[in-house]
Image: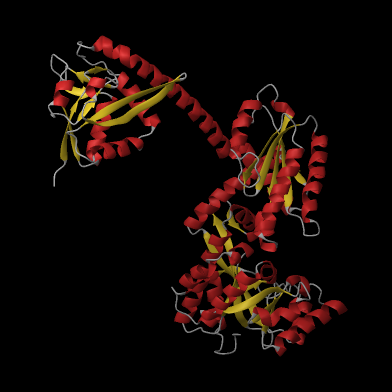
Length: 607
């Protein structure tokens, strides 16, 4: 079924609301534009009668030749036998309400009035004003028969619409200001956010007063707070901190929360010593909220100089200084010139790390374990060395801390696991089934929810006895994230790998919790091995070895640097011993060669 044809007798001279463009031979303006949109979306085909020399609208309506009469201006002669009017435009000029309507004649389809009114109600006043402004920019060739009358009658309407547009623009500005305020407000604390800080910083920190300002960044370890407490308690702390900072913000200072873990203040402060004292005092007030629950905040300070115009660079430097202060258990750290140079070098090295991981510049090194009873090589620990193209082979101490800061440890851990699995597969292919490989994972990697899915995918790519692979789990991480890590341990056992409880014995409470953690291996920390030779050290290590034997758990010791330490460990019955007194870390290819040379007898070298 086609659309119902609707005929309109329009006003040819009501520019720009409705007019006939003689040059193009069509009706234009706001009303025709609205009719076109109505026709496109509804079951009506709107068609205009072309205007003649005389105004024929009344006779067209009387003879039932049109359905809609437009531009009536309230004249009674147009109202005979009509179905009523539909409001198209409505605005206010001062105290006077100005309206523009179209009339339905008695020839119009019965549903037309309702449908048109419903359509027009869905078109906003702002949209109608926009149409009016757009139409008024055209220069049409108008019919001049009633132009003067039309402009006189419609002048009020246009002025009213203009007044309405001004009123709407004012309301829009008000809404925009409210929206801008919302956009620049931190939803949790109610203070400004990064956008707020950037705008106010550019406005108030200028060349003339720049040297009087210092940037102060407060780093908050919200990750640790949520692990050791609750999200609700953490949010309370952040609101408390915002309140304390706000109460100590001067009239010419700028305060904002710029990230989940960071508050920043541009503070006008004349002296460095005074600034340091102010920060120390402020941190005491902030951390009193979390009394007896550890330290969670560190600050970075940076005195502004003439050349410091890059706000992003400033925030990066001062936030990193705050993180350094937190890690080093300091109240604050200052961004001195030497510190900034060192930080820039570290950033360059971090960029090199990303490239190095992509280009497989990191190499697998192996440090052997020896069998406590036979002294033969029984297994090894997977370690990483970086073959930097310019700096040569770098040890973990030179890049691991930087990787942790850059959040790249997860990539390195999984890369090392892949290399270890490949090494075990090569041994499997030549029939060496009694060598084990242990892999260490950073605390942050172990806490990741998707960690085991990635491990399962990597291990599944290689062929070897899964029991030859040992995952080391730090006792410290178990205490911080027990539910997550214990869940990972269960999944480790499901895929057949063994689990070593690393750093065992740092806390005596670990003795009672060994069975809870379900380890296959207890790994004695080097700090315990260093105590050997003293009565206390000997008693502690002997007790740990006995715990392992009674529970049927293999005991491995690391860090035996001297032969007398190794001898004591053997006498106590320690199963596996690692240390420089036996072997230093060597490249994987060299480790494979040594294993082949040793020709370990089947069943004697493994766990």
